[in-house]
Image (cartoon, rainbow, N blue to C red):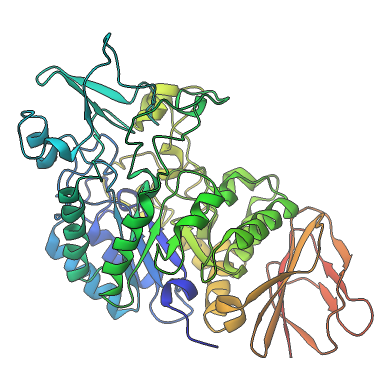
Length: 539
């Protein structure tokens, strides 16, 4: 087999720095805190989690209206998180352990305090005026079109000093850049170079399908929905044809630096994500279908097969179950057996063909936190409560220990710790061989040494999975079978395809059960116990 790039074979772990580890007691996580936990992430041995790269949510200077996704300086570190020297140390220490660094670049918009926008709004004659999307009112007054902000309300803000509107896909404090302006494109490319030259190995591109808007600013057609943004089909305020050339430019720049990557956040569906990644385009684009599925083997298998059909030749899938914008999967899917289901979800994510993205805390089965109305900090949570609680529940700090402050901080945490942190924390699970964390570690290290799991093909063995998901991973002479029972009753399945004769050895089970696989020239029968994830290898 040809050797695949690291971003295809590796496991990528998302760190939300505010909630990962606080080194100075101010209640907010920081870069020094990340450095202090690198051995936990990968010390080169199976004692550690074993991840191959960490993606850091924004740590750039920001007024914090959207918690760092409103950047006021792309080439610096916010003092809340440390210094550029701290970043350099993080790169050095991570690379020493074989951990690559992925940065979160927010290039669709800036903070309204960014020097570019300060200059842009200072005068209609300013050279940076066209760096953002400014428009006159309609002939009879009013906003230029019907576009809505993702965070609620109209997406146009009146600026009385220059008597024009500017466009903001998110908060009024987050004006959108004009990617049609070549000077903007050159400035953005210089941001990539700045961090690549400091040792960054890749980038997560925030709102990557929003860089261009319709040149004619046509109204979006209506759609059924609850909130304003959801009541439109986003035909004209995202996913424009010009994106492809921009992605080619980004990919060409990355390729000049060697083994570097980018993964685009696509706000649309799997079809859009598949169009944006592949040879000459973005290496990866997030497919968020898993965050929208019910706890059903058929739903997940259909999502996988659909994405495989959509990907271009040479495209590579990626999968994610949780992140800083979505409810944690242990909360969505936990049911009456949250620990067991967390293991099944882990086995699925880490054994499919594609790049798995883990979100900090999911490896311990961490669930959404409880946020009182008075504690809500997330802007859409404040606006839409009680219909929507915002993203704070999935951003609560990681509990490292059962001690006061949960080993996260010696001060007052910026968001409240989860009520169950004394039971669900890293230290407790490190000492428990049956913990969710122990299972994640086994899975990741098994994946590292198994070409079939990190690089092989995917072949489902049930056309209509009912209670279990069963598939083969094959690479060269190595064949592995994965069986995932999603429910509370044992299951015995006669596979639709008889496996070739040979000895099958079970190498991992989430519950150390007596599950069995009989493969041969006749029927192949698989037995899985309650909520079991198991992996066999053909010897």
